[in-house]
Image (cartoon, chains in turn green, yellow):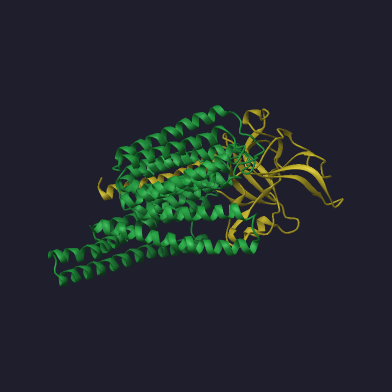
Length: 437
Length: 201
């Protein structure tokens, strides 16, 4: 638990402890004041260290740039290597001699920046004009090694951001699949599994989703608004992501807890897209050869099944709720399999998707209430609100006069939005009081 | 593992990665076959490009087929079906006055014997070219190819002299092409005389 959450938790718990007579009112105030003071100092120290590292990094780079022509090649190399080694040594010094762990994190981040500067400067000195994303990949790998060896979350976040830039360049600019990123993700998962790094873990999940979106930029899938191959690929990705979410939801490991919210959001967005009646209708280029798609479907379905089985095993829900959940999970997978195998010829699948989407939202909200997970409840309510808005536009846009459409829509939004917000707040209050009890 | 051992390992690995970049380049320069390439003027420099010269070679534009613009090189042999960002292999015939591209292929194995193989990446394809003599656009398929020798870092303020030489001055580049088809700049020549020469240190 980080310092801020610890402080909030204490604020909630202390009144009850005082009622029980375990802590005096004065003692409670002193504890809160102490935690609040420590919290502020740590946050400021941390931000100042990181800002200082960034400023120093930028300053050193610009200084090199300004004096570059006056320095010989050998001296340039010596400077680059010394700066790189110096940032690592400074990290070690902050940790061991000066006992400044936050500043050490800033130094770890600085060393990642220096490594990037070193790559660019060596490229400049020796006129190396290679495939641009390779340089970013090397930089990301250096950052990953730094994060791994030093146990540094800022270095890991920097490395993940670089890996995102790398895969963006490869997949969207060069339109080539970035398979090596899978190796990077696997390696990055090791320190994330060992440390409780929430921000970096969410960055890891985001990077995986970005890589999956990048598949749609590949020439072999065809033009986005023309080829049915995109629909098949999309359905498989939604199934795979839902499987990843189920696996993460079943685990209590901090890494799984951090990434599951984004996987759930991505899977819900995927399901929502399928609820549109006109989605994927009349695509001129049919996807060729069903066999490879069926093989991919089997793989994604295996992942999904493993996730759902883990979730069922870890679940403490009553039998009836569990059965509803399993039925929804099966229907969700069957509809996705249908999208892969049969090209859309009518709006009937969209009708079924709407029913499944609402069912899944209800189930997610229910699960959130039972687990005391505010994020899941918020997602379920937001999803329902967006779904309602989309269906209103779908249904009445062509039927009503524009002015009437907007007036009715406004009234509907105000009424439903107000009601939903009141329900959401009531549920969150129940969750909080359940926690305290 | 001890913290200082970790630091030593990290320093070693990162410096080894940087040294590998330099070694790879030096290997090309030391083992490659020297070839002189003629340059062509480029557009004015970008604000972001700072102190390096952008080099544009005669072999950067490969004319595949169509109505040839009078005075331009003849159409190249080899493959014709290319798309943007494809890797291409260009057959190069060395010439003291400037190497010539002979043909362009998807595969290295298709390079005719006796010619050097240079690896490149297609930056863009043009279907038409402007004929200045007739002031008309003529149909001509052209590949714009990048070989990784298009940037040369120079002393501040001297990049423009290489990019856009004054009247009558001729800039050519001596490059080395290694057995992998990679090229590296050995020297910059102004009117055939070495202006800049690459050294390891």
